[in-house]
Amino acid sequence: MATDQEDAAAGEAASAASDVTDDVARAVVGRFPASVPHDSHGQPVVYVERDAWHDVARYLRDDERFTQCVDVTAVDHLVDVERATIPGVALERFEVVANFLSHPRNRRLRVICELSDDAPTLASLVDLYPGLNFAEREIFDLYGIDFDGHPDLTRILMPEDWVGYPLRKDDAPARIPVVFKEDPGPR
Image (tube, rainbow, N blue to C red; front, side, top):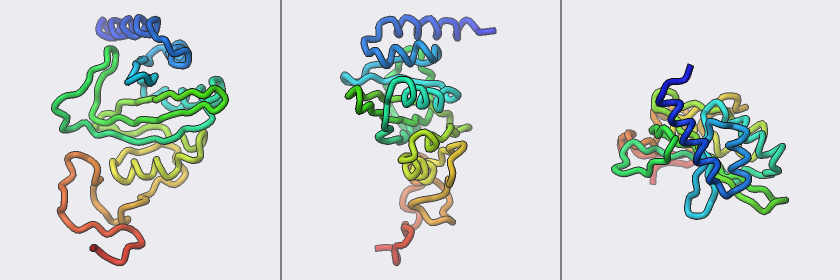
């Protein structure tokens, strides 16, 4: 049973979906009703629930002909003084951002998923877009965000024995010199 607050958020999202001018964003929201469409500087953006992340990517690839996920990255908003609020989106510490490209349709779509500090885990998209292998490993290595189902979720830049995640805003900067893999020593 949904709470009044959840009902209000769903109503806002439905209202926002009817105002969406981008047909792909509208289709995603139609297929995944908990998603929230947004326009960012002329580019369509859809905020999706964690549980829908993989399904949205599959839908974009199979039904909407988005043949490439150009990149996936993360943002840590821990120390943001000011942050844009999107109606219907519960802002969390982390965002995972994927940029999809449809070559046949000459279209782009940005998909964002909010992740909390206590559960930074998301489904891997490597089975759908194999080119994301290293990008997801980099996010894991530098932010500590886990990707369920990733075939080799190991550090890619930092030494295997490194403690912490250097791009998290609460990681202590310059605590020790960084020696990257295959690097003979600090410079």
